[in-house]
Each structure stands twice: as C-alpha cells, then as structure tokens.
Image 1 (spheres, one colour):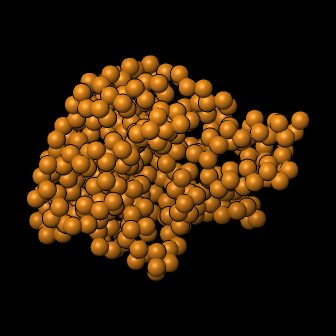
Image 2 (tube, helix red, strand yellow):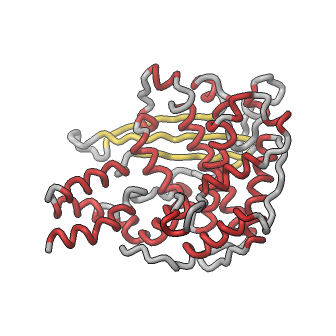
Image 3 (tube, one colour):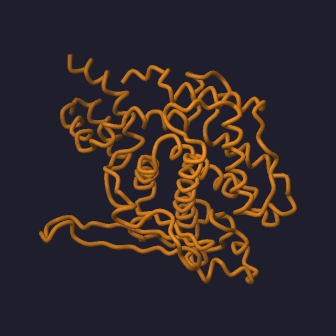
Amino acid sequence: MQLNNTLRLLPLLAIFFIVCNQPYNNKQLNNSGEYACISFTNDDTTSTAPYKTVRGALLGTRFSSFEELKSVIRIEYSHGMVTSDSTAPEYRMVRVRHCSGGREVISVLEQGINEGDFLDALKGMRYGAFWSSLSLPFRCPYAVMNRGDLKKIHTLSRRQPHLFGEGDLAFFDLAKLSAEHINTPDLAYKNPRDSTEKGYLNSFNHITAQAFATSCFSEEMTDFVADVHERFRHPELITGKFTEQQIADLEEGPVDNYVDIINNEWGQELGKQLKKKYAINHETTWTPELLANYLNDLQSYYSWAFQIGFEPFRPEDKEVRRFSQKINTVMKGRLNYNY
C-alpha cells in the first residue's frame, strides 16, 4: 500500500523539480520591477565598447570580463542572521540592478529551497523514507497551491513529443526562430561571438520564455520558477564567492548567469506590457494571428535593444500554427497530467 501511494505521488513531486520556495513580493519588499533611473555608464554611447550599442536586454557575448559586466550592472550582496539568535543560520541574498534608457529592473535572489531538495526527496522515497520525503512539499505551500499552473509552464518550456508528436515546439524553439529571422547580418554579427549559442539565441531564449510565462500567468510565478532554478544550479550567485576559474569562464560563469538574470527581468517587464496590450489571461484563445503578433512584438523589442532587423512571423507559418495549438491545449487544461 505504501509503495502504491509513493508511485502515485511521484508525478506530483516532479512538479517541484521546477520550483519550490515562497516567492518574494518584489514590488513591495525590494522595489523590484521597472523604475526610472539615471545610468551615466550604460547610456553613454560615445564609447567604442561593444556593449554600449545595446539597450535594455543584454548580450553576454559582448562582455570580455566580469569586471566589464559590473560596469554596466550593479550587484549588491548582503548577509545576516535570520533572527537575533546567534545560533540561527546566516541569511544571504543578492540584488542585481540594470539601468538602461532611463528605466531600471531589479532582481533579488535569496537563499531557499531549490530543485536539489526535491531530488533528495525522491531519493528518500525510493529508499523507503516515505514520510520524511513528504515533509518537503508541506514546506512549500505556494507550489502546492499553484501546481497546475506550474506544470503548464513546464509543459510549454519543454519539448513534449510524447504529448504533441514529433517536432513539438517549446519556448526555446520560438527564440531560435527569432535568431534565424535576423536579416541584417552586417549589423548583427560584427562581434563573431554574438552568433554563438550564448549570443542572441541565449538572450532571446530567456526573454521569450519569461515574457510568455508572465503574460499567461503572472510575474510572481515566473520569477519564482527562474529563481529556484538559479539557486540550485549556481548557488555562488547569491554569495559572490566565485573561484578564479568560474570568473574566467565567460560561457558558464557569473557573466553568463547574471546576464540571464537581468534578461529574465526585462522579459517579465515585456510580458506585462503584452499581457495588457492583448488582454491575455488563462481563457485567451491563441489564434495564429495573435501568436504571430506577439512574437513580432518580441522581435520589435529585440530590434530596438540590439539595433538589428528581422523577418516577421506570419500566421500561416507552420511553427506559429503548431505552437498556437499547443498553448491553447495547455492553457485550457485539455491535458491529463495525472497528479
């Protein structure tokens, strides 16, 4: 009987691989979001530095060092005790700010439960520690209450050929199509690194996923998903305690990851604007026309941010038609997730 109960709970726990920690209300606690600001460094276009021609979203491939990135964004580490009790664990968090074009986004990443905690929980279940494994979901009521929407985000974020057939598309594929739509190679690829996976494609991927998730669900939930992933994969981002090897690694080190964090925030801001523009909610029917317009608005932002041109998406594009079917199926709850 215990084994059968465990097996039935495995799909539910799989949801928690995505996220689990009560989210901050960044607007209230941290002044997070988009605000007016003055940036003398990043808005000075007289410099020959390649990142000076980029506005809003960032391109990680434009930075040659961590120090160079820190001349464009502000990274503030803080730590202290959770309570006045000297035996309490130390609490750490990092606040990352980016000001561009008179607007500022702020991301806060704090200590908390991460994907690894749920991997450990599943291990415990496999080896008979059933009740101790079950304690973890009860520490995360937000994920329990929102498990349906979290599963939908996961489904849209991953290729699911077992559900939608071969050639299924995810947010990454939409970002890849945008990268393929660039029609000003002379402007876009002056820096050869921009054509690599860590160039436009990586920036488009983060912004596309965050914008869609924010438009379809909420900024709070989208931020929640992103932060738990970062806590597990890159805990040093919170403490700032990087090795020299990590600092020198422009592909996977702090340069790449702090750029991703900032682009997540710009994606959320864009998602909020498009949510309002198209009155998007859980009941929205994503016609090919709506999806094409949404994707073209994303490309308009990329065009402004990176000063490059794009071929537009069209409602008749097979990828547009296919993803519109997927998002409608997911958002309208037509899949049986069995959890």
